[in-house]
Length: 262
Length: 243
Figure 1 (cartoon, rainbow over the protein chains, first blue to last red):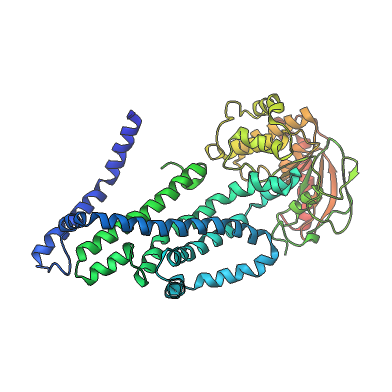
Figure 2 (figure 1 turned 90 degrees about the horizontal axis):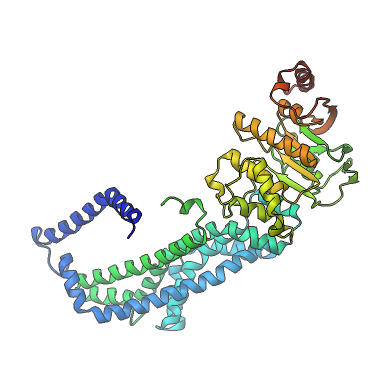
């Protein structure tokens, strides 16, 4: 580890120690208050009990994390792969802009989660309805931000590109796409955060596996400790999604103002 | 109605604009008169409704590619270095950047940006960004350079320095330059001809030949004949009621 890295970690710690202290205090208070207020185990358990009880059920939790993770990633990826080209097409086609675009804007107002029971009833308990619901949650923010991104070239750059006489394709590759990337990432990040929400709710409604299913079952069995373990793993899944997108963003647009001087 | 550059196309009436080869022409007028629109008409990017534009001996009827452009907001893309941005001009035109290495060096030297090839735009000051944009606008050795208030956002001292660089580059390479400005002083210092544009509706009202020797440095601005040109032009704008 270089001296520079060490000093960076040192600086980070000196800036963030209060945050860590608060987290530790929070969990300590939680741990103690179960005894202080004599809270029964079926209402809330100590954090230490959550850790030990969850590790006893680890194989099942791992399997369900994998299943929920698969639904989340599949739905998210399909949304990214469809929404970006479609956003592009809508930007450059006046017909699509007058037909599909207003339709998408209105559908964005509909809470997609409300469709979940319908998809479960149409497609059953399997993987597909969950992937579709995650897809619906992720698709609209990406497509709407992509339209915003591809349609907002600055006047100066637009004129510069025109004066060079370059083909539309060249302008597209060398100017429009890189110019649009930061705004595209806004939509993709939003989708990444919400993808796990879609997966969990879809599992609440109709499922026989996955973390959403697990949380519902153990809550029914008066096991809040295990429910917390499921919630924790769902959070981890969401953080993982967000982290991957952030990493990709940092690699693809290191020049953007949002990526500088971290 | 004339608040934006993209306002109605009849904001400016070119009324038979003629710009000769190697001229440094300023389009001087109050803000909102449509100078920028006129500049884009000269580039062939905006439709003209009346009059005619003759540039370097040929009428402008369609978009021209033999021009370099520079705006108030820089056209440097944030994802490329200074060198990468200069190369962008060449790449867009299907020219080979490798074949222009010495020209790039020469241009960067002439605006004191040597050694900053690898800097990213956000690492540069506003003045340095516009210097790099000037190199970008000139690298393909255009016949014509179109400048839309290129120094408008810079502080007074930086502006002086870049004016000097620009004038030297113009004297060395002798491209035709058309510069939009609302600074009377800048117009007199830089150009051999000034087109005075009336406020709303904007139209070319007078053409003033500035008969002063180049290079025009800071000293010449203190001379009586420089002051006389400024006074004459000020009187014209006072006549319009804009100052």
